[in-house]
Length: 442
Ligand SMILES: [Zn+2]
Image (tube, rainbow, N blue to C red; front, side, top):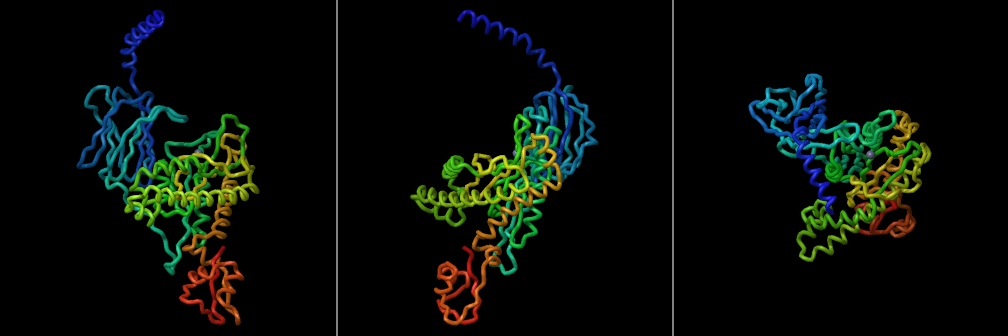
């Protein structure tokens, strides 16, 4: 005990002695990066140490001033690539006090700003991050559901999520390829295929090199009323050997904990369940009902996820090595929408030198996108949601012959009389010879 105390006293004494020396060490601004997203902009200051900072805004013209204490700079601010719609220019300005580095952002309009620091992670060191957003919160582009000409059938919406982006490179291959670049290429190719399919439409959670946080990604999918969310990634391991693709779905445990969290936020229910949420909010004895409804929607979306994941794996099998032959389940943060069928595709190991080369290759990216697309298409062709254009176009037609009644036709196609009536808008069971009936899919 005595020994320990003596040791502590010594440490404290040494620290007190050393602290003033530490404080002298000046910080250094090494570089500045601007990541422009459609609705927001992230500015990153690379520094040699953790910065102490302050910020304030000025109007007429609109400016954001950032003061970093005890810092010098060796950056040419005129050479920074800037495609932000918020920032005219970033420049140095005379500091209020010696030792402070004052940076001024000349803005095009008033913005909401938030500043925070990020610790070093490869390939970056200490950073000061400035996020800029429109002051009116969510601005344009509230996605609308596109209806087809006859207004009665909608497109199947596939939300495509390219992992990482901007300040977050994802995994980095041995020759320096960033996961965020590879997966965006594959995601764009997949989106083009989906968009050129009648009855299907793609929504991308990001379309450029910028970061979108995970909550925002599933929010985008939910706002676009997505039928499916596909998140695209590339794997990495500490050793170069592992290779191949895998497909992941939400784990049951994660899904259950998400449901628990949602139940605590009643205002979220209507968002999740559409009409059913209204009922939940207006019922006293709502906990049980909410649980049952969420459970139903989760079970169905997990079954769909598993089925699509299996389809995609079959198609990936013919063009690349598979790391796992069956859909795996995990609690990836982006797969946390139990109400939307969600899958995550690891397209290969970027940490494997051979596969890093493949993943960077346009031909291979196209093959991967095509395999994912075929899996998705096959699933929705055989299981189109009832109100979609695909459901209409994929159904069989039947011309009524002499002697056939509705129940005979229903029996022949193994469908119910009621579904036949619903799909064909029949008020009674009477059909006439020569009448064309749409036979609903399985
Ligand atoms: Zn990733």
